[in-house]
Length: 470
Image (cartoon, rainbow, N blue to C red; front, side, top):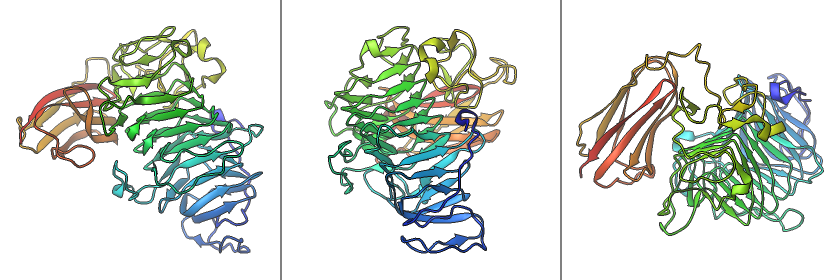
């Protein structure tokens, strides 16, 4: 197996106690496992749910999760590259003393998502959400579980989650912590080349770590994750982690009080290591917009962290991103030291590009795109128009893309806090328009005042100032 290059060859097997299709073939029949009958559907689809207690592979193109799935001691669950795993309710994938190998490739990422993504809202309801991936009490002596080239979206962790494990070995899961991924105990886990987006929790919109957890998080993009109390992206309590060349942008915390001290990453009795990360443009309700709460300068090296300067080689500089990658002239280009990241730094960035060889690499999950195939700097005019201005309260935002690529269009208030994300993701070349109805991401009416509309693309960025009148 060469997971760095995506050369992964799973072994197909059935799981007793779990409704699983391991090799999609519409004419195949098999003995019914203890958890229920095996259902085979045309088009390479499978229904799964229940206990996985033997090595099992999900290699259908579409996996429909109809109940909680628990991987028990001694069993390995493998999800094949290119699979789309759709959770048909508030179900959880639990790795309980077992092992998970979800290894995609740049061309065939694995998607873990809701079966009803359009119903998902950044609130405390369960509509359109699933309950994330939990690693609990996994023996430290096991081979590492892996999430690689995966997209995890539309998951939530809520305070009324009923499932907690007894306090033996690795402790309990913290209720309401870690929207998409939560780890309790010294579970060996690596998360690399993954995108975690549109997730929510009370603590740690995307990831929650507890009770000695020390996963390796490398080359990941975390954006548009939400917390209702602490840590818009990652919550770390009584645990450590190693974060290497991740990009965290556009995550937010909306706590009940602006006196609740919190950040995009929140520590509680924790001392993570940070190398080469880019942490910028995340907003909180705390009066001081912290990106990392109580970082230790000794443990933060060659990172670009908004409003905080500490640690060897760190920057406090606008990264000048085009989409999520550094634009030409960005201060994060060649600003990190490959030798510091050492064996943790993978050969390819999140876009699948080869990391630059030599002393210096770019901060964050992305290297600067190959300028030989990109438009020359200044040759593309990124245009954004907003009308009417003042808006009362509706606003039409129009823009033109000369080439296809990722786009992000946000509304921010004067303090820089994210009010609403209108567009995020790839779009074709051409003219585009979207309407803002004057509401924030929770559906509440934004107050009268001045706002900034910010457009980011691979070719550049544009910003327009608008006034909202009620």
